Amino acid sequence: MLRNDQRVRARRTQCRAAALLPRNDDLALKADQRLRCERAAATLRAVGTDPLIVAEHLREARTGLAAVLGLDATGEMLDALFGRFCIGK
Image 1 (cartoon, one colour):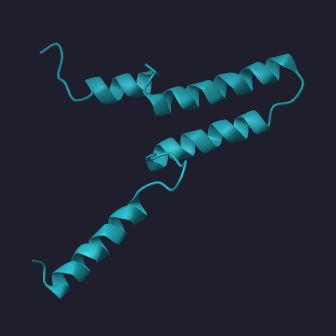
Image 2 (cartoon, rainbow, N blue to C red):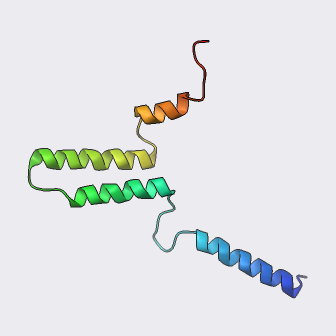
Image 3 (cartoon, rainbow, N blue to C red):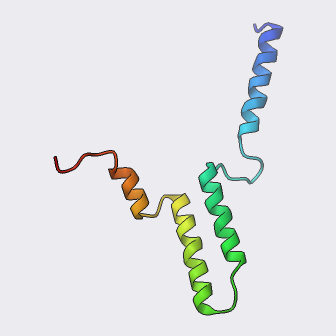
């Protein structure tokens, strides 16, 4: 059986843990992922009527969202992956 102080500590821990979880339909994102999503949304809001500009905005938004989903194979990602290995020695 838990003592009163143990119950209080357990309740505090539960409240702190609950504060770390996303609310309602929020997504659990890292800070950089959230920033990329916000940038993608801002890019899409800035879309004009020129087809070339619209295409560029869509490309930028897709690139940002692909990075969040782990679907991009850009030089940055490859550098991060292979930068830890010493190849060719």
